[in-house]
Length: 488
Image 1 (cartoon, rainbow, N blue to C red):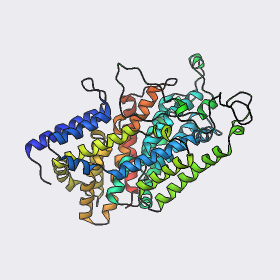
Image 2 (cartoon, rainbow, N blue to C red; image 1 turned 180 degrees about the horizontal axis):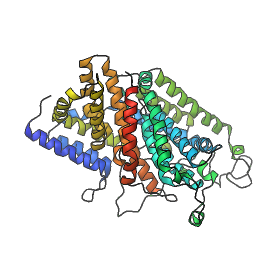
Image 3 (tube, rainbow, N blue to C red; image 1 turned 60 degrees about the vertical axis):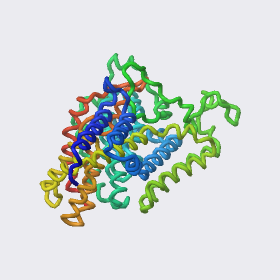
Image 4 (cartoon, rainbow, N blue to C red; image 1 turned 180 degrees about the vertical axis):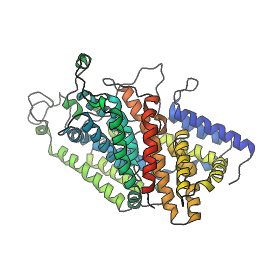
């Protein structure tokens, strides 16, 4: 594709630069509007500058991807109501042999959960939970937050529903769920193992519990507080430094099935949550037990349907709606926890990226790099990986996939049709692992950073430099060792 006219190239580049700046730095002093508004602003400028027409803008919005994101978030919310945290708490703490063992468990649970329910959702759900676990075991928060974010990114690379860029790749390439999984999972498993070893080497001495007087003065986190944890929906916006941090969502808006208000009477006349009740399970009604079990059954059924190759978007939406209907009450409190700002962010991003593609700049860049990035030899794979790593951290991973996906696949297919699937899977793996390089490389990293900072009782600030000291070497090692294992 040739470059568009000079005005189109210049104006399209300005619109994309504004989108990129607000996506990476959502609280810049001169325009602190956040990522969602920045995404819509970039899309609107593409239309105002006539880089793209309104009809083309609407056509660029990928509804299957939005549907898949929405359905996955709804199912995840009902899993939280079914007390997934209680079982995670038991799994992470069961016969734990100290901080190093707990760190390994956080990595494995994060990777597995991300492969099944997206890395963003996993980080939304687990960040404050992991902070409580670290405080409960008198351990520093930093290694556990890094373990959560990095393992979530690596683990999510194994499935089409693991992260947004994989959703884009699965829809555009039409690679089946099972073929995608088989092609990437060896690299993912080895990557998680390498990441765990790197974390242990880096934080070995810090993973011993503190016993000093300062730690003793800190608030104690009980096992019950960890097990009864609830989470708030993710927000793509960034708070203004002049505004106080918002309070977490009231747990009454989304009450786990056996964690009810203390003043609610039980059928036997005893107040729920009262100290007179030795076991909260005695207060569970048959309906609550049925709903709790049904959530897990529907979730497993959804995964089976995805493995069978059914339409991913409608499968997740159907699973979510089944849970809404079976719950048989107002779904408003549940649906309020869906991150609609994330969905709107994607709409604006689709428009902005499509407009930038129409300037011809991405095509021109790829035409320059394509002769050195052919995947039929090792050096070409290495160059392609470097390009993806750099672009994923400059423009973020989803825009990188939207910009390069079709070009990379076309180039690979020109060499041999057998290489096309492998090219898509390399793009999926590298663009996902690239999220670990810096704090700005992945939305999951930013979610962990923001959720940890906003936590009222266990707040912790994870800085850009603290992340990159770990992220840069870990990303390069995991990428280099994982690439040869990806099969098309």
